[in-house]
Amino acid sequence: MPQSTSSDGVAAESGTFESWGRYPKYPAHIIPLHWQSDFPANIAGLHNGALPVGMGRSYGDVCLLQDGNLLLTTGMNRLLAFDPATGILTAESGITLAQILDFAVPRGFFLPVTPGTKYVTLGGAIANDIHGKNHELAGSFGNHVPSFELVRSDGTRRLCSPTENPDWFAATIGGMGLTGLITWAQLRLKPIVSRLIDYEGIQFHGIDEFLALKDQYKHVEYTVSWVDCVSTGKNFARGIFMAGDHTLDPGPLPPTPEPKLSLPFDLPGFLLNSTTVSMFNTAFFHKQRKPHVITKQDYEPFFYPLDKILHWNRGYGKNGLLQFQYAIPWQHAKEGTIAILHEIAKSGLASFLAVLKTFGDVPSLGLMSFPLPGIMFALDFPIKADISFPLMQRLGDMTREFGGRLYSAKDACMTPEQFQAFYPNWQQFARYRDPAFTSSFWERVTENRLDTVTL
Ligand SMILES: Cc1cc2nc3c(=O)[nH]c(=O)nc-3n(C[C@H](O)[C@H](O)[C@H](O)COP(=O)(O)OP(=O)(O)OC[C@H]3O[C@@H](n4cnc5c(N)ncnc54)[C@H](O)[C@@H]3O)c2cc1C
Image (cartoon, rainbow, N blue to C red):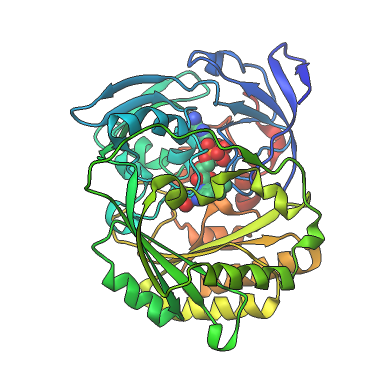
């Protein structure tokens, strides 16, 4: 990324900050923050607004700001305090969950909620109020954040917790970086006695079997399923239900070695087609040779199978990928999921990664949080301009008809009408937005105009 100095004399880098989906791509000014005092001191006088960003593991444009200033927080990554009696860790917002695990696991502690990659920052996890495989029992990330500091572009600082500035707390959890910069946060870790997970994998055929397994395993902390969304007929919605608990048998707690595999270049897009995807899905389904497997597994492959290959998103070619992720409430969850899976299979648009799980009824604390009690489904599509975008529009409309919503952290396609129906609190939330902060996502879904914001 080329170094440059902006006309305002602020040390910055110009270039493209890519989100995980690598679509859309926008030029931006990247301003690395190293110290909490760097903000707002280092940004006065810049134009076109600002947005804090972490590891760019969001898929669409929630972490992008076209021609604006991205406040890169990953240099602000210090651990500040840890109390083993309560499990409460305090750290700067740019620390990654991988760094927290490196500190916590050898001491017998684990994250209270984790997404499918550990390469996200603490600030990013709060700002998208991320969820994990234990949503049924634990709720989302914000439920485990006792407090954080929020700094606005005018320099005002607020300590936010469920009891102190609770309205700012609720707006910032799931607030997509728009309410200000989270400088540091607390996170309540939980004790573990081993790296191992007591794991069960069970093949299922169809949504009824999936729902029966979900009821049968409701006492297990972590559950998630892989589902084949390409096959039709008797193989329609076949999948593998995966359930796991931290084992109670004490074992060694060494730190995780660094991953060695990385995809160093973009694969040509033509490698992804309905034949290769169908072969992959069939091989994955039969990888588990028996219908029911019980074993112990290290937490890394259980929680982060995709982290084994760094930059696996390059496998979708330089055009990138789109993710479609919905939550549909129980009332319409089953019919909605079946209808959407049929629509996807009909489209013939290849997808390797389809994840199906359920959300529980622990209320999220954020005004704009994604989870709701019901079924959650996520899958990636390669970008084929004439097919992918109309399909995303159709699937978004179907989600709306079934009373569900799409996940802003994964989105690059929602229309303003869809967003405003999915998130009826959006106008209330808008009152908490920092006037100097915006994102390409926010501009798109609220039909704001980008050109007027000055810091
Ligand atoms: C392989 C993979 C698997 C995933 N699995 C899951 C999953 O299971 N569940 C789930 O919920 N998500 C999942 N995600 C999405 C990911 O967890 C979220 O998008 C997460 O928020 C990314 O964090 P980040 O540090 O990369 O933040 P970025 O993507 O850089 O930014 C995300 C948002 O946080 C804001 N932000 C960042 N830092 C700050 C700060 N210090 N102060 C204020 N705002 C800030 C940004 O403005 C932006 O709006 C997955 C992503 C990948 C690539």
